[in-house]
Amino acid sequence: MCAHRKMLMLSKIREINIIMLVLGCFDIYRPLPDEFIRYARTDTHYLLYIYDCMKNDLLHRVGGRKNLVMSVFSASTLLCAKV
Image (cartoon, rainbow, N blue to C red; front, top):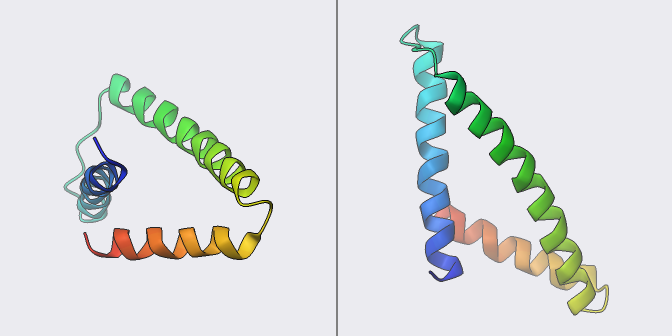
């Protein structure tokens, strides 16, 4: 699966999480099973680690030029905005 499709898939998951959060604010909250809560905690923890690894790898590949890294971040933001 290409990176673009993965980003779109992950953004759909994010939308579901936001909808669940909003529903919780309107007292339509349904408790999640412990298994789901453990999965969410683990998933979030690893996403932060993966972000750091990818950012450091990108910095290494572009010779530490932060302007190029910011360009990639901007392109990623635009991609996510399309969803």
